[in-house]
Image 1 (cartoon, rainbow, N blue to C red):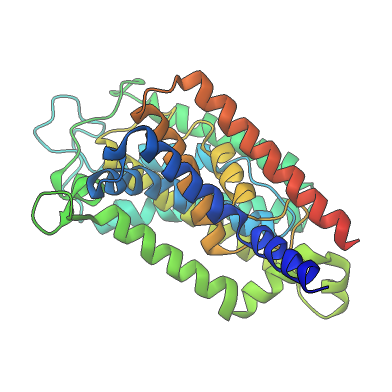
Image 2: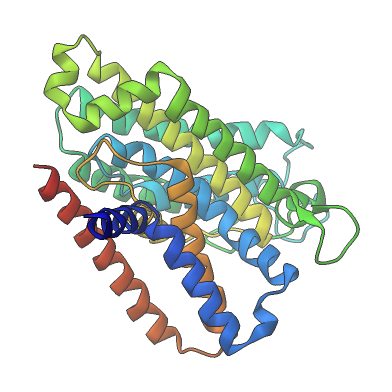
Length: 340
């Protein structure tokens, strides 16, 4: 009896902490192959590359917890990257997007880009909540439309679809600057921004009425309506927040890479959804945590960086990522069926 109790306890622990165990196993496995992987500078690089992906995944997490999905995330990232970059070029750059544009305060283009993402999120929320269009179809439509709008903007004269470069140093510092002296122990600004955003999202998830309503809607939308929750208004707020997070991620991606094109963010939404699912966000809705989402992002960050570090072919990396995604979804469905 005692042995069975211990076995159940171990099984429950493994189930509840599977995502963190997988992350540890990945790191240990890569470190065994090449011990130099356990280097603070490499950890910083992984965090640096994962920061914008984490913000996108947190936005996608809002939608997934309501039992929805958001396919527009990547194209919103691309649009807001282009929008912010086009307004924050150095005046001496040879190919200016707006040759006669006066010097703008840094916060203004950033705020405009985040607001643009928020508006797309509101449109998604309106289509889903008020027109009763399934989230998959609604966000598929906005994904295509946003890419079209971005491409028209990107093709305006005199730019005419040329990559946007020559970004202002005060802007690129957000993506490449760091606190502390140059070295492995310096902390990138973009990582700090991602941590702050994660903390804010954790508060929304766990300490606000919107967060409680979000879980209730994802758990059982009919029960949420009966209990007096204004589902439509909450869904619009949730999609708007997600859109704003995509907008911020687009701004930071442009700052990190020092430029932008209309193809930025392509397929990012699938990486975000995959990270959420691997991180324990249920595809059935109603379940998901901020630490889990961040762990999911880090797993893919370790796969991308770590397996390249030890010389694993990118094609094998795709196979490993695909296997992890399928295993995570299968595990989630098994838990859901067990509960039923």
